[in-house]
Amino acid sequence: MRSIELLAPAKTADIGIEAIKHGADAVYIGAASFGARAAAGNSVEDIARLVYFAHLYKAKVYVTLNTIIFEEEMKAVEKMAWQLHEIKVDAFIIQDLKLLSLNLPPVPLHASTQMDNRTVEKVQQLAQLGFPQVVLARELTTEEIAEIHQACPETQLEVFVHGALCVSLSGRCNASEALFGRSANRGECAQVCRMAFDLIADGKTVLRDKHLLSLRDNCQIDHLEPLIMAGASSFKIEGRLKDADYVKNVTAAYSQALDAIIAKHSQQFCRASSGHSLLKFKPNVYKSFNRGFVKDTSKPDANFDTPKAMGEAINVQTTLHNGDGLCYIDKGKLVGFRLNNAAAFHPVKGIQYFRNQDIEWDKALSKPSAERRIAADIEMHDDRITMTDEDGLTATLHTSESFELAHTHQTENIKRQLSKMGGTIFDARNIDIRLKKNYFIPSSTLTRWRRELTSQLTAERLKYYPKAQQEHTSREIETETPYELTHDPSVPVMICKHCIRRQLGICLKEKSSSSLRTAKELTLRMANGATFSLDFDCKNCFMKLYLQ
Image (cartoon, rainbow, N blue to C red; front, side):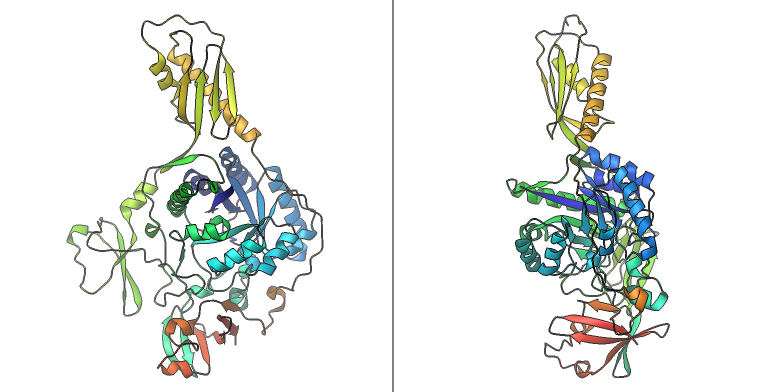
């Protein structure tokens, strides 16, 4: 049976805890440094708090060490790795293969998508190097994922299913470093792709001030089953800079979707962690930050008008509230406004409005919105009470007190008192009372027994947590000199599956009457004057950008 993992982002330990409450089987979080989101670092102490909570549910915590590491930083990385091992993190997500030369603790290594993992050969190489889990490139098709799975059946394949899409192949974007000295491969991306450009064809400006590289977002919530069947095991939500409300909603939505699929294939698949989430809201991915969603991540399209979130399209059935944020596109520009009086709002005919902030939704998610519980059965005998959780772990309390016989039946009262699991991680599933006589047991005694049982069983869950170990042998791996050290002008600053020609309807593989189709030279120009030449590899459907 294949375990299916929902992997959620955690900007902070508290957000990671919310992700687990809302259905995540694992979370990924950045340490104080060396993560691909420099603005999302966390102390070892905070990560330890997250690890403790996660492991109660057999959920995992992966720490990102996924930047290019310079030589003078190697010892600092090694020291941090051992500190993280001491708090029992479950894996390191890494980009730089030079880390394999270090004395690493026995923690599994996952290959970051920053390694540009797009081919069977690349994944086979990583498997031979000892990577049990590989984060695949976002641009792969279901068929390509299936091909990799067939060639590498023992390797866990991790795929991005929701969130922002990088326009460049991951790990192959040098634009931020080239323009501003802020390397995306060092966690300091300036998001050049979200900026505005002019498009110039053979020296003539044909589009002005458009977000030609700003991709719409990824959303695979309706495509999860084909991905599972193709061989994907870990389903990753992007967003280590996102707030708690985003993580709560999107995680809950995907958790419910995966549960529905697994219920259809219960003999083939199961969730990777324990417990079930009790939600206090109905998840809806359109409610959270999104730029609209691409139809095909292998051929992603951009929203030329704005890089900002537009939210959900509203219609006559939409209930609006005072304080909602609405927006629309006017003459190619995003216009937003606050709805002060919802009852008096009259949409202008012909304009499609979007709600990018639902004030009542935000209020609901700002409160505690989910609990995660582990099912447990209780069996009570004259001399003992046993509590067994859904993973088969058991706590037993031997009772020696003497009790008087009751004048009324006590079974229902005993069940009621023992089932009060509020404040614990457990949920009483079955309570079987096997007392030989109808004893009167005070509620205070039953409460004390219940607390002792839940405390014991909680300790058992941590004691028997199935933590993976992976011993490492130090080895030297030859790697390319990073662009950050060369600034080689012959190296593209971006390599993209997104194609401006395709989106404009002037793909050279297709017929078009547009005069732009015959343009010999297309370039992009930023407001600061920086100019990129575009090179189209039509055979492989790649667009490359070079800084002029």
